[in-house]
Image (cartoon, rainbow, N blue to C red; front, side, top):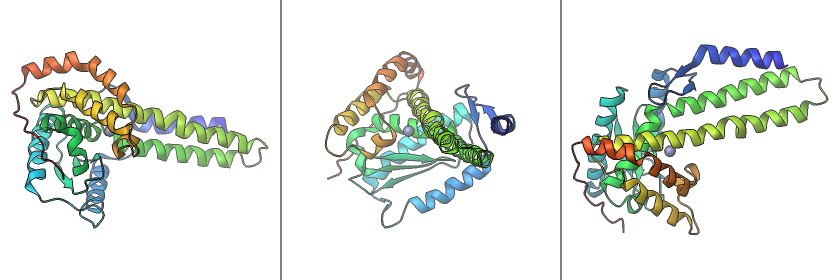
Length: 270
Ligand SMILES: [Zn+2]
């Protein structure tokens, strides 16, 4: 069983592991960029513009998002050259504090996150974070890890058919697959998106200091009864603030060299 496990793992890694040009980290990427971009386009159509997720056409909300989206994606194209067909949508949902990015640069912000962002500088920090999730190919990596975990578990199940330890070993592998492999990478993804997103916002002319305020307001909100949705996928805001302070000198140096943006205040959502 171990031999099978080892060979399979080696095969997957040798065929598909690549080093990120941005982070320098090795990534397991089983899906082509073309396939991921296509999935991004399909998911974007399904995840926006339905009754549950109505797209806002209110210029008070869309104008700042388009402006910040353009500034951050232009900085991203200049630095990382992903060649994406960027799209930005506002979801008209005041109760949901969330924003996300799909592979290929398809991005959505919920109106519920606007009070946390406060102004376009705050929006630029979260935009930088989302844009970097796409550029760093985190969606591909997450899907690849879960596909590889499934293949390995299936292989282990076949190999262990007659073993009296089957339940025990499968349990250990299952736990390993979710806690040991996938979750730490998720935290790694969040941290990477935070760091490179901060530099990106600074390069686009937004004061990186705005990031501290965003996470402080997010932390304050998560102390209430209903933690914002962004928090469930983005845990531990206080830890992030600590990290952000660590990256701040580099971000400030980038900001000092940039052509400064004029960040407007975001509209109230009531
Ligand atoms: Zn994130």
